[in-house]
Length: 292
Image 1 (cartoon, rainbow, N blue to C red):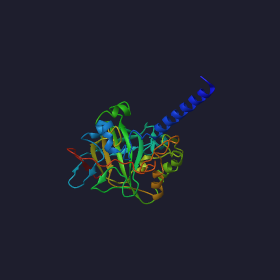
Image 2: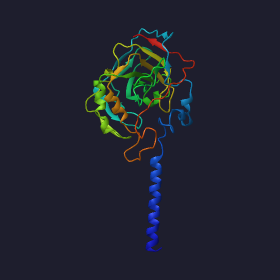
Image 3: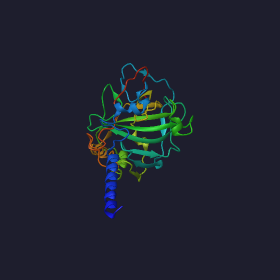
Image 4: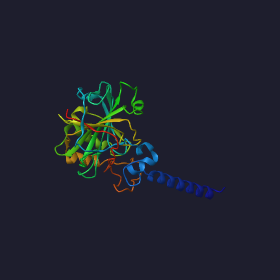
């Protein structure tokens, strides 16, 4: 093979490799919230997403049964155990060392420990929450994800059972700046792209993210992201908490692709503008109300 032929072959190989890399980079995420990989497509890959106990739901407060429990819902968190905030490509998420944390009482049997917390939001302030109340949507919804440490040995083991996880849902509405959330917002510039993470510099108190003196709704449901496992006892607080417009815009500035990837040509131009799953039928399930 002549030197010229070798050079031509190398150029062809490089061109083929570059085309392959471009194709890989342009491939959509396995799941997401745009037209190509959004919630309506999830059941094709994750069959449990088509189940009968899926979340979120529209909560209709009229004629709800009251939760009969003498055990008040209680929680304890250790701010110093919030480790880092990351961008998994569809939200921001704070990972937690759950040692010493406790969620118990109310509809829960046993003690649940905190695993992580994250947020959902919309492209405008008129949508963004996953749960709705009589059809009313909020600008966002925080989720504090716990697992049953009384019965199971790990988060992964707990997620295989209907009583394995407990998630606290907190509605967000536009208003004054939320000082505890601002500790997260101040780190978002470091995790603009998918796969990036940043250490929590100032300890975050998850308890300060919860509304004061609020009752809640509770029901049996699922994770709202794939694999949508039906393993969650939901506790959705009635009262929303305030978040500023600037904080909401900081959420919407995150990107769903990594810094090495080509920006996907979706309707959101690669930004995480909308990351909530639409509500699903309640079916035969029962929602209970607790005035706390």
